[in-house]
Image (tube, rainbow, N blue to C red):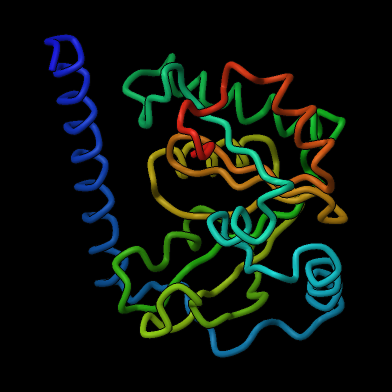
Length: 233
């Protein structure tokens, strides 16, 4: 392997290891304090029923999880990377700024507005047996329990717990996007009618649009952000 690529690989590994260590420490504190993301049943309310109706009308073949959505709706899906050369994790303020710039550029195009306060945010969390459990309590304090669903990819893992929120300020959305960039949680951002979905992840975002035509137009506008991987990952 050429020396520059070897150095880049080592830097990436060190950065990832550092993030994982911080994540494990935070997770340990959450467990000691009894914090987790589980609930016995979702909220029974008009807003919960409304969100359920919207989801069932638009994305009923999948749970609010990026990896399920991209498989179930592959003809409407595209992934963008959030840093040049498909770098996965930021190592400087400039790189974090670039991550936010790309996220916000696509979100504003999808929404047709720079005001994102009316978007849905659906975060997945887990029970106390999972080290990652409880992350949403600190990052999404206004969230309410919407649904719990059996984990389809691993039935032995129990349930995924979905917390919902809306009306978030710009600073809160930015904080969530940066947390996801550091692999500190999972969420889906959706239009008020859930016509489109934006699923940020560490390294980029999966975007689901109503049609393949709309997906292709978005891909063309941001071709420089597309993965080099032949499967678009």
